[in-house]
Image (cartoon, rainbow, N blue to C red; front, side, top):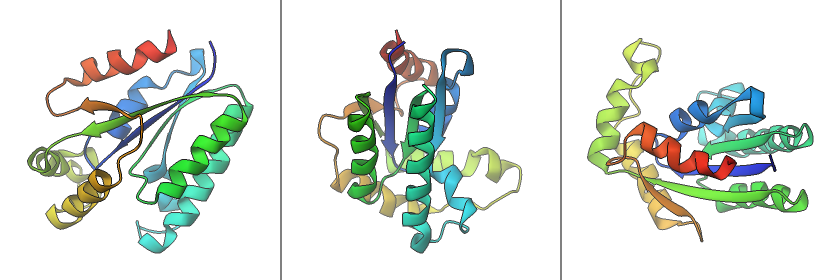
Length: 169
């Protein structure tokens, strides 16, 4: 299999990490990398640590490529330069990039926010309407050129997985 970089971008609760984790497959060398899983290394999601988290994610991304993994990389990518750095790493290594923009209504994002595993188990509070609405606007105002739109509100999880899995065939 040729290495790939699959980028999943979307607002919180749009399904990015769920999809990435379901696509990960060690046997065929597909790893998932989530910026949100790197952020807690530095803080409890403080914006001032965003650059540190993304820089660390880039080191991990490059390392995974060097070890012959394809990577499903998910994030909000609030700052376009963070995404551009990932694209440049893939380009330098001649790795194909496919970008998916996950779309979902604010109403559905808010419903999902209340039922996330960490919230259900009392590990953290819901992100809340103000933050989710703000991040949704950030994503909508900064579209990624050539991104494939994926409506995670109307498509079932398995349908989303099948669409993305075709990139690995």
